[in-house]
Length: 509
Ligand SMILES: *[C@@H]1O[C@H](CO)[C@@H](O)[C@H](O)[C@H]1NC(C)=O
Ligand SMILES: *[C@@H]1O[C@H](CO)[C@@H](O)[C@H](O)[C@H]1NC(C)=O
Ligand SMILES: *[C@@H]1O[C@H](CO)[C@@H](O)[C@H](O)[C@H]1NC(C)=O
Ligand SMILES: *[C@@H]1O[C@H](CO)[C@@H](O)[C@H](O)[C@H]1NC(C)=O
Ligand SMILES: *[C@@H]1O[C@H](CO)[C@@H](O)[C@H](O)[C@H]1NC(C)=O
Ligand SMILES: *[C@@H]1O[C@H](CO)[C@@H](O)[C@H](O)[C@H]1NC(C)=O
Ligand SMILES: *[C@@H]1O[C@H](CO)[C@@H](O)[C@H](O)[C@H]1NC(C)=O
Image 1 (tube, rainbow, N blue to C red):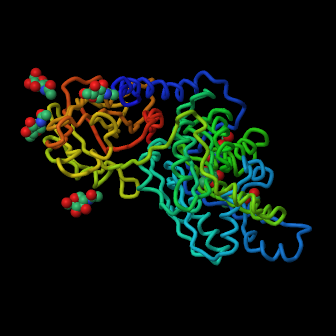
Image 2 (cartoon, rainbow, N blue to C red; image 1 turned 30 degrees about the vertical axis):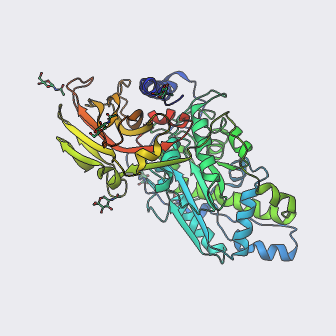
Image 3 (spheres, rainbow, N blue to C red; image 1 turned 90 degrees about the vertical axis):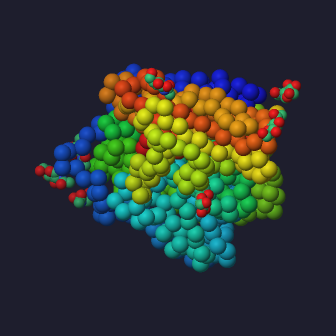
């Protein structure tokens, strides 16, 4: 049904994009912000301020029996920066933690290679950390894990700046080792905010992501790392994040949560604490080194707590048998994860092009934060992408769900400035029709660049002909320019495209 309605949905995406961004912007103006410390940087402020080592502290343990103390000692050789009360407050849902207890058992035994991953946006990618690969939270965490176990630890930072969790639902294969054992999810800021409890599209998309991850070979443990919504000059209220509505999801699937939001509000609102103020931990929406260290602290604290718990309450046979049970049905009725999804970005996307006139294949980002795509600024420019070939059992053929029709998700850029429109139609044996607008109407002074995802129905009527998709830049524009950019396509076999809905607001973090 989602497929039949896709043309309507395309209109829906644009609407939703504006609504969601509208929320973000107007919330600043309309919501009464609590008396949090203001976010003001002095003129000589440096984003690369290191962690102040005089704040570091170590946990002490009392009344442990000597054998347990000996087994756990290596795990506790770690110095935290987050003050103790704030560290403890940031431990969110732990639950039965069946999978995480298994992971920590393997960590303590050290008898097999452990694979660790993270998916998220630019925060966990490590933007603004003074030395990405060293001072970002994931690197600190991996370094610590490596130091506490005899096991080999392999890690993959799969974060993609400027994407929400719904991107990862479809594009996981580029970011996650299929044999991962522990995966952290950090999307709180990029996913925006939606206050509905029932059928919240952010939570529904996240559910599909959690299900896809949990179904991976090694039954990985999943942990949510929830961050506050910190903007360049203000901070959204405590509740203004998807963290709480996602609470239902973590409890339902027995995955764990740690919350930088809770930790940081304590240090900025309840008890403003020098060294941990918003402006000392954040810059331009991203945590600086002290913020990264705080995130690592929270995840490490969770692992330590689970380790202690293994001694006070060892794994029983019953726990093992519960762990082996298949996933329950989705929390939201029918909200199954895609059965397969292939995401063509960067070179694989470029390879689809069989004709282009007036388009350039360029990286508009940097080497560490690449933004590859086909870009055109000239009306009339045509780009033709070959989605399927006759006789080849390719992606398009595999994606066909009903009556030769398959859903295609197209990544394109939305921006506040100089963006134009493009028509989409299909050639050869295929039929499709859509119009995409890259311009976003935003309130004065708001500069946002987002990557959007449009759902396009493609019907491959005659499969003895190739299936080609054409993008044509139009004369019409809602802005003063004609720029149009496409950066990827997804072929998905899924019976619920719910998770593609919130994709409309990928704020360019
Ligand atoms: C943080 O903000 C306070 C005012 O609230 C200011 O005094 C201080 O200099 C700022 N520090 C940094 C590092 O931006
Ligand atoms: C910024 O300037 C103030 C006043 O000159 C000085 O006290 C402070 O140490 C400087 N801070 C940094 C990070 O350079
Ligand atoms: C580090 O923290 C200590 C204790 O709060 C303080 O005295 C010192 O000035 C701080 N150092 C820097 C470089 O901010
Ligand atoms: C793109 O095409 C080139 C040339 O045919 C090929 O060598 C390369 O492996 C392809 N890359 C991807 C990611 O498909
Ligand atoms: C744009 O307008 C020009 C001049 O009216 C016309 O020749 C051209 O076909 C139009 N191009 C498109 C893509 O509509
Ligand atoms: C599929 O195609 C058949 C024959 O063309 C048609 O009768 C049927 O309604 C189509 N089903 C859907 C779901 O479009
Ligand atoms: C499909 O395309 C082939 C090759 O052009 C053509 O011979 C055939 O008639 C087409 N089939 C239909 C049903 O249009």
